[in-house]
Length: 501
Image (cartoon, rainbow, N blue to C red; front, top):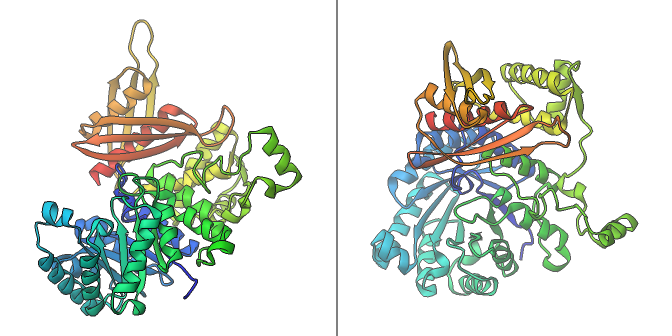
């Protein structure tokens, strides 16, 4: 059996379904281009039928990625499938991924369909997708809680009507590894025509078993694995791309499987996704967490100093975790700034570069010199910003005292429009956010507010992440500055722009 595992990344589809994540078209394209550099085989770029924004993003990505299969998700109905094809038709290697539930739980309580009706939906949807596109993937949703004999019937129908990839999802993260491996083995033994298709798996992490279940399936013959950067996704998330890839690489002696991933791009991909989604990586996250290669124990430190492999099973450089020696100061020129951005993998258009360079100069005047991490944060600010969004034009804050409460005056700009608003609050950050809310007429409830330092030192850039609830919809915003009030205002405005978008 082939030992090459295809990596199917769903960060832009299932990953974006994490509460509060709302990526713009430019942000999605940036992530997609980095995923292509990473070497993923398939990018599930979105769900075109859900919104015009998703359709536009999938269409744009489809036209930009010649080396990677670009996939669009569609429910098992004609409208969704036609819309998905319209979105990916411009891709060099398009794929339509259609799905329908197969568990009796879903059929009774959600679809309200009979088993025979779902079989017919499978037949019609796969055939419709195949009429558009030679590469069709089919998923029986909630497969791990489906009757195996019925599941085999559905999969046979999908194969007969042209599906070339059968994806077996553990939709609610219910399975344990041995059980999931038995399900995949049963599919290989009982589904006619299975030898002519690729068996894929898509595992959720509700019990913390998504990676373990995915690996168990790969060991018994699955050859595509669906995953997301940093394990993003619905509820507790998806199988983590970086954990699966590095397990297959580090334990090739045991598993005998490989991928086409350039592992040195893993760290940068993780940082980019974290910065754009507003979902920071936990410090103890496997492979990409900041503590993944840190050693606090004296015994561990002693061992690593003598021989790295005593306590490290991976080289930090193998996932791209290398020290950045980039330092630019207020006397650095535009050419040097562009060069360092490109070394970090960021390619801004001329107008964006001009704006980013101006912002760099402002921060360099305050901080003196900026590290690679600082420069990356500036680049991501401009990737996060869509062309017609409100920008922070200026701000003035007063801390108040015994005679007056804290206040803030905020000026916002959008093209030729300018609006200025003053507000008072419990503190300067609260006042600044209230002024933005008043200026744009948005009612929002603050759900969470976090501040982190990008680098060490008292003059570090502050990185603020804010999550807002606007009429039941959660959005995440992020902003950076040496001034926490300014960083907070930028984060708040970033979140509000997503609502307005």
